[in-house]
Image (cartoon, rainbow, N blue to C red; front, top):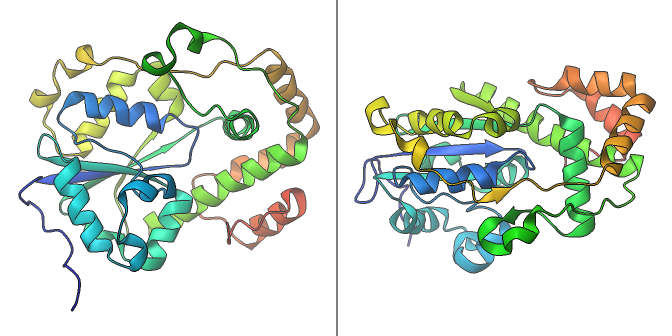
Length: 280
């Protein structure tokens, strides 16, 4: 028998929803925590990440995407809203098994795209987290010790270039997807989130269909539970050394951002990082 049809909107649990597209190491975990605190934007998470699927995604790997999404909407909606975040790698995988817009249609969904302006710091954050195993620090889980700097490991040029390639691969996928589907996307970034979290949360809430009256005063109730991972001064020296060594290649990378990458970019990353950004 055929599986269930895509979720209809509005439904018993939610009227509208939103998708937070992101590229990693850009504050998405902090942002969805703030959104959940409002009580007006569901209980978002990275529902299509394999770590989440291991515990909650029964049936998805068997092709029952609609059934999985039905369960998510019933269990993770709040304030008549449903939201989730997805990075470029998982979104590409999701597109290979279903049409996401069949489940999250533009007439009922807002789309938000979270990136980080400083791609070198973003790449370092990825490489460092993989090296030391520290991805997030919170006041609730770790307490005062969470403010202690994380020792910086020796992260080589190749490792940084590989992380830059992975980030550009995600950005390229998303830019192509947005253009292909003429998708209206609200663009936000890590730097704005760090400077004014309440403002960025409000922008996402508006994308999720909340009104200005509903948003008013919400920012004053939010608690910053996530702390920035602090590094030793070795990080600053490492990044300045990298910039000095690769000024022209980094300028080329900067020119790629905000658009779909082509064959020249693919060849560039094959040579400098050993990464095929079209098959990541």
